[in-house]
Amino acid sequence: MCRDHMIEEKLEALELDGYQLEYKLIITNSVDVKALKKAMPELCERFSRVAESRRFTVTLPV
Image (cartoon, rainbow, N blue to C red):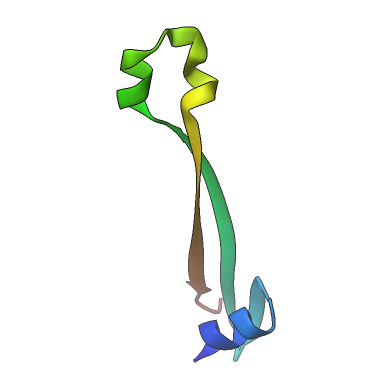
């Protein structure tokens, strides 16, 4: 599978038969609202957490 090859080779983008494939690491920050409600608003950054995900994209040839 192309995605597995991209993971093994640590590739974020690959062109195959005119298709552009992308498998990029996405990092987002979110606030833990439950903890924020218990704390003072100025402590928002203290209760934030980092989440990681990956996006796999296939672009059709033009």
